[in-house]
Image (tube, one colour):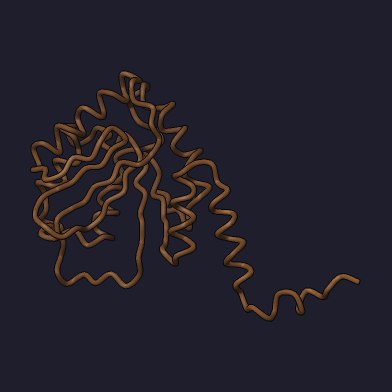
Length: 197
């Protein structure tokens, strides 16, 4: 006769569920899904922000993370040389606070450390050119490490959070559309929550 559910699983609390989540996470073929689900199982919130172009998605993320409102040079660099009024975010991105005074940009092509804002802007300009030329098709998010000097010292983070910045769904650049649609299909199913602007 089969064992009863409570006899099989109740003795080890929720350990059986944690094992199941670990096994499920390990079975995911896409590394970015494994990473997102791992963060979720560790108690970290994983939130995606997506919506129309030029509605302030990146600004919302920077403010949620505690970046000072007067860090205008950073905001201009993150536009990659694009004028205000034109879409700026060209691929999925994650922003983090780091110690130190320089910027870091990690892309599938490499890890660029000790950047100043002019060099960061140039890397992002080149990335946009590559996406528009359809020579960049990678879907892994680029990662920004931002120095603590751009953060408001009074903002306290109470829970780990990863916020995935997705490019605008209605970009005026037709050569971005296919890339944006692939990003949305890949990331939206694996997040804890979604902010839609």
